[in-house]
Length: 166
Image 1 (cartoon, rainbow, N blue to C red):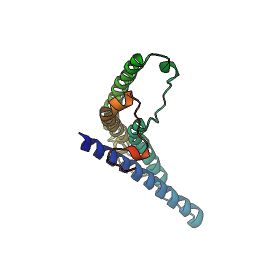
Image 2 (cartoon, one colour):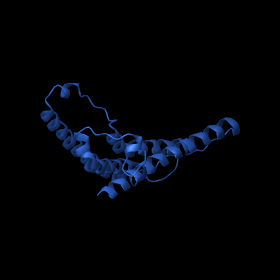
Image 3 (spheres, helix red, strand yellow):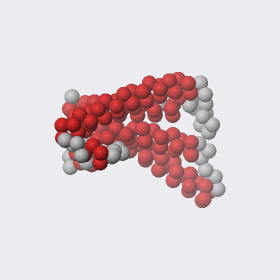
Image 4 (cartoon, rainbow, N blue to C red):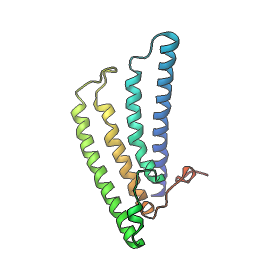
């Protein structure tokens, strides 16, 4: 199981990094093209937007692992540790149910958008919409592996990912 978790984190980090690198390259080429050569990529803004949305959805599970999701713990912190632990397990269940719904409705949204085309690239709208169920599935996988550590507030830092030296 540990090797599967390590592979999940490694692949997820690579996907987010690739999306960010592609966004940077597209925007950089577009700016240079527009201000130096007087023309830009007609599809650049649309693709960069799609990649930014994908990066946000794909990075949510990694944010969970680092404790970077928004949390208001002032109210919870006044309770005894045992009740605090039960509340955090409840949060895991709610996150899991919510992301399962996001996956379900995201998949339906992909099917809805599949026959339609995007404006600039002319690809199926279902392709960029895949970011929703893909991100939800990645989040659910991270939640499955990380739930126990989430409850104990054992968050990871940059060098603490499974399989990473640091």
